Image (cartoon, rainbow, N blue to C red; front, side, top):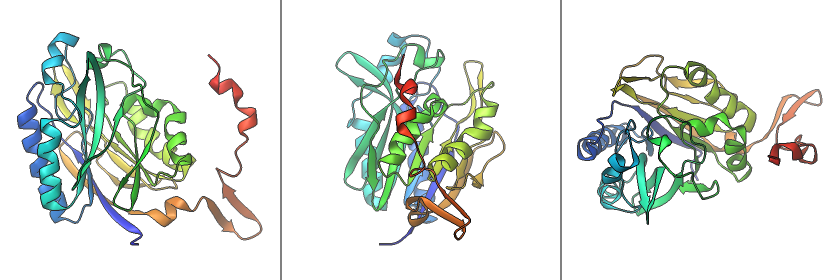
Length: 277
């Protein structure tokens, strides 16, 4: 099994209510990242639909099922290129509306996630809270967990998937002004405290007066930035994921003198307050 897997993070602008144009742009980007050896490309939150809808009724026509027409079109591209992609979208299921992301590979949908923590902002004012537990999915040999944007403010979101064996946690996001500290620090912290790779993939551009701040990054298990875009321009970031490093939780810095194991050193019996309302 190869230990290294190249991923790409696509910091892109998105057009509100224009899913075909957005998907065209994502597939064009996917072709470029595949040419550069990326086995997984991650796109921002709501990259298919846009984010700043003013009502549930306005957003509903741009929501799709998973799988659905856009998933199928992206799956065709993934099959042709033999790669995986994570796309942010609005998902409709019966009469519910979710802020979701979907992992798609050469065989079609490999997993999906519905945003659990909802801020009072954009479409999240009108979506339903995610109703499924956090799950780790396979993108080839790479084990991938997914969160969306505000989920990253809740450490338990990443910790559960790290405990379940994630090598990489992907965070499609739409960080606006006010989230500068999140963009600057959250990926590094979640990566370090869980000894995983963490990819925070933000969008850029302006939507209904809301600018988005970019600053996408990929961090390694020490929390170090290994690819970053410290700006608000479109960009593609590349990073190589060493799965053995993510899976080695016991870190020996000085033999017999300095050893860190943030999983084995946990004290879950002392954390009951975390689960209380």
